[in-house]
Amino acid sequence: MYHQKNNCVTIIVCYIITAGAFHTTAAFSRIPSRPADGDTTLYCSNSSAHMPDEWDAALYCGNGSAHMSDEGEAAPYYGDGSTRLTGGKVFTLKDCMEYALANSTDIRIQQADNDDRQTARRDAILAAFTPSISADAAAYSNFGRTVDPETNTYITTASFSNAWSVSAGITLFNGFQAVNNLRITKTARAMGISQEQEIRDRICLATIEAYYNVLYCSRLADILGSCVKTAEEVLRSVSRQEELGQKSRSDVIQAKAGLADREYQLTNARNSLTDAFITLKAIMFWPITEPLEIDCEEGMQDRMPCYAESLPDMSGPAGNRTAYLHGNRTVLTDGSKGDTTTGIIRNAIGFLPAASIAKGNMENARMELRTAKWRLAPSLSLYGGWSTNYYTYPGQKGYIPTPYWNQLRENSGEYVQLTLSIPIFNRLSRQSDIARKRNAYRRASAEYEQTVREIEAEVMRAVSDKDGAMAALSQAERRSEVQEEAYHLNRKKFEQGLISAIEYQTASDSWLEARAEELNAMLQLRLKHHVVDYYNGIPYLMQE
Image 1 (cartoon, rainbow, N blue to C red):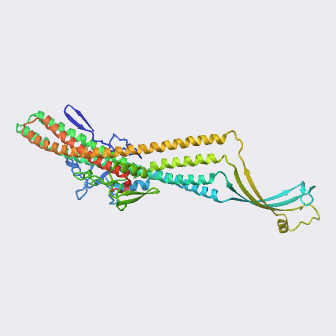
Image 2 (spheres, rainbow, N blue to C red):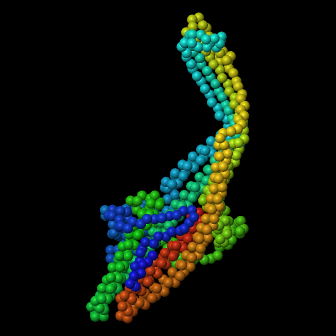
């Protein structure tokens, strides 16, 4: 983003790269202040920022200083004067996504919910096909008046009894409620897996955005560092020309002002790089105080490869297709990626977790409505059991009880019970439940249709954004080339005294703006291409 005032362009180096993807939104807050001493270093592998004096070939560190290793390469530096290594691990974009997924608390929470759904699925299976069985045992001692089981008369004496029983029951028919519950739990389990995949996709996209923000800020710091060196050279040249009488004092002041502007912009770029790293670490669940080394050269070629080639239709032969395991579904995608909007929309509807979740909600609502209707039907249950008991009168003199095992055998009894329950009137509670379930099904159906429409719109928007990003990159490259040529011509004119310092500064600002726009357009195209590939059925982790 840029602000123009008095013919002088000031660059705001904080340019957030975002993608409008259907399944997630990512917002990053900025920390305006510089980090305090002792904060973690920000290190980009294979990236050298061209900065003046002690900043030459060094990278920005948490306390605003840099450290050079013995070999002359930039090394992580802390405010306490120490350097620490990251174990030699240089994180690529894929490494960052894998680390973020492995350490995400949102995924662990969703996995716990999935375990609950699996338990509910098991309970539904057992409730549908197995009986309930219980066993009871009781020991009873009585002092005083009681009924004699032998004579069925009341007696007054101490007695002791022991009872045993086993019972079982199973529902034979309850309006297919058990079967519908079985289907509901199956769909809920599949939805839980889709929800976990949705979280994974959201984390991957947020990691991509944060990673590209780091690349942008790092490369912009490189650009501004080279501009600082150029401004210093210009100041030295103008100062020398002033001594020779070829330049005026105002030209020197203007050159100093230009250098101050570039140093200020470079400081803002370093602060933005700090903030971008903090955001990336937060998304990855990387320890905030530990250094993170990423590959800043990944995808940062001098010229971004153009994705303008047309991509075949997804209706090609099955031999060109690739199967991806996405959540609990195996998604078949064309190996050539397909570029027809219809094909991408079809892939997105079958691939995105949001669509499967909305469809699962609709199916569950339909099953619950069917269950509510069948509750008006009678229910049939079967029960059976066995019981026995033992008794004696220890307080009665001369009483000789029947042996324990003989009593258990003689007093045993069995029963079988068949129960038919017919609902007649319960204040219309079942009818009210049917009305609520019908409305829930209508809502779920409308939400599924709305989700599909939103996916279609997002796919159209993503394809359009990618096409626009390709056009913007092409124009940004041409603009950068022209502005670079114009800058070098104006610099020669300025050295020869043919133009003023203000005109030269304007040319320099225009070139710097063009380079920043080209960098942003390149990363925007990469991000848009990731999103379109994702909609086309290729998970983020499987993209090249």
